[in-house]
Length: 72
Image (cartoon, rainbow, N blue to C red):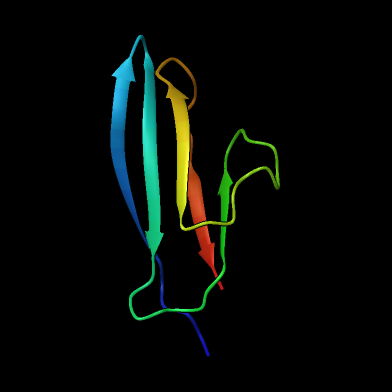
């Protein structure tokens, strides 16, 4: 059965000395038994947790970080 498009909620946890700590939470309405996979630019492949949440630190003086949540 196809999974609906996920929704990502981003929250700034802390901003200090040019660094931003973020929390990303991926949800799918009406889905119960799904798998999560995160991918972010600039990060090593396969190093991210297979959970609905992701914590990361972004430096203000670097290129933008783009993260995608894939649900299946």
